[in-house]
Structures are given as C-alpha cells and as structure tokens.
Amino acid sequence: MSRLERMRQQMLAENIDAYVVIRPENGRYMSGFTGGEATLFITSERACLLTDFRYIEQARVQAPDFEIVKTGLDHFEVLSELGQKAQRVGFEGDFITFLGYERLKDALPQAELLSLPDLVSHLRSVKDKSEIELIRKAVRIADDAFAEVLKTVDIGQTEEEIGLNLEYAMRRAGASGGSFDFIVASGIRSSMPHGTASSKQIKSGEFLTMDFGAIYQGYCSDITRTVFLGEPEEKHREVYEIVLAAQLAGIKAVAPGRTGKDVDAVARKIITDAGYGDYFGHGLGHSVGLAIHEGPNLNMREERVLEPGMVITVEPGIYIPDWGGVRIEDIVLVTETGCEVLTQAPKDFIIFE
Image 1: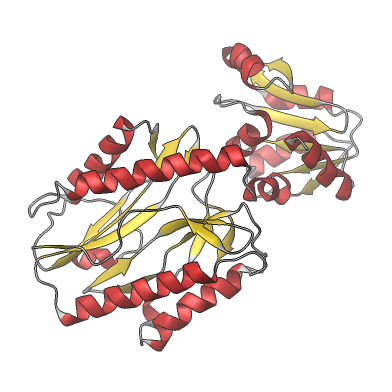
Image 2: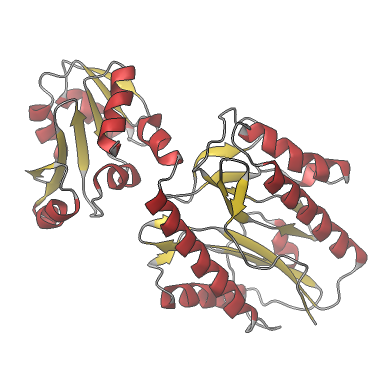
C-alpha cells in the first residue's frame, strides 16, 4: 500500500475531508519532494503539491504521484481555491505558527480546522526497507568517522576542532552534512548533556563526550561515545561501567509490544540502584528518520508500543556537575523478536594515555 493510500485511510478514520502538510520532513515523506518550499493538500481524490516557479521542474520529477500546482510565494491563496468544498481539514498543529494558523483560517473560512499532528508522523515512525537501508548507511558513515577521528584525538585540540574533523570525515564519505549541532564536551563540560563544541582545549584527566550523526539522502544517524584522556580514577571507571550496563540492558529490553516507558524503566533502574538516579535527567532515547528527533520515544511518559520497523536510540547518561559525565548511544532497529543494533563503533572504555 502506498503512503498516500495509508494517509487516506487515516484521514477516513479521523473523518476529515482534507489534510494540509507544511512540515518539510512530512512533505518529503509523502511526496518525495526535497525542495525548500512546498505545501501539500491531500483529499480523498486529489494530492496537490503547491510550490513556486523555482521548484516546479524539480517537483514534477520527484513527486510523480502529486498534482504540481504553481503558486506565488503565498501558498494560502491557492489553498483557498483548492479547499472550497472541504468541511473538516486537518493540519500539523505542532508545527504551524500562530500566524500560519490565522492565515489557514482565512483561506478556509467554511472549514472546521482540526489539529492532527500525528497523522504523517505516525506513518513515518515505522520505516520501510528503503528507509532502513538509508539509515544503515548514515550509521556506517558515523561509525567510520568515529574510527577515523579517534586516530587524531590529542591533548591540546579544541572541542571545535574535533567536531570539524567528525563532520569532514562524514562529508568525505557521502554525508550531506551533520544531523544536528555536534556535542563535543570535555572535562566538567561533559556534565552538560547538550554541551555543543566550544573553544575549550581537551586535556589529561578528563572525559571527552562526542555526540554526532550524519545525514545521508535525507536520513539521520545519531551516535554518542565517551572516551577518557590520561589515567582514569576509580570513579571514572565506575560511572562509565554503570552507564554501559544501563545501555546494554536498555538495548536488551527493546522489543515489539514494549512501551517506551517500559524500556526506559529498565535502564533507569540500573543507574538509580547504583546511586546516580538524580544525575540521569533525560529520556533513554528517541526515534530517528528524516528528522533527528521523531516519535515514539523511550522515556518515563511514553505509552506508545514499539513495532517492528521502528528505529530508535538508546542513550543513557550520568552527568555530575563540576565533575563530568558519560553518555553512550546506539541506534537500534526494532525487529519481530527484539532489536538489531545498527551502530558498530566500539563502546568499551577507550583511554588515551
């Protein structure tokens, strides 16, 4: 069944006449169009892609299942013409701005507007074979970049240099860019879960956390590894081994039929029982695809059940202010019987002496 057919089934279940897609990842998923300006208008009978003259030829090639509608820079004027008969219209309430919502109301004054943000994202959460292969490639690129950069890590380098080396290695391997602003944090900065790369120089006696990923043909990867420079103390080894144990247990818990809440609890218990529960303040993981953060998640609130074909991270961490932190992250594919770990970079405690 095509993506459009599955989308229309969901629209029928929600009893809506039309759905408006503005989020770029959702538009790409539904149509195949990768250009910078597009709005989709989908009904039971029509699938329209609205874009301006800069992208018309590209859209015709990339979105053969859609009727390409040329617009000016204001797509809402054309939506008004296309949606004259629609009485119930869904839209991405988690993405559209307040101004955009007001414009949508003006364009479709006769319609009841319904915020249904999960219609496309729900479809995107289970990847097909082609998507999984692209993610595998994005993961391999990140794995190889880590191996390459490990050969160059040295005392005195800045975090920014390491981040640039990671991105350069991935771009040489075919990535179109990084999937987010890389986190490269050393020393006490490694206690910052989102400590983006700074001008700080790395030095002996410190953790170095690297969280990075590649984009390959639109699909993202995400990996975190923490290494140590110099001779670690007993506490450094202890914290690392606790995080690793939690991560391995979390991976083992990933299986169809489990909720994100269930899996999170398994890993979180190990860290809590070790006395570090207060230092693990984020969820265990998130789904990955056309966006770096998708649903479902692995956290204390996620009730959605995992299904085969979902691709999700497992990334516990311990972050101790003014001391340092450790995070270890892999991407896994949910299978019929459990999960397959896609990330292959080593995660034993790597020490640079």
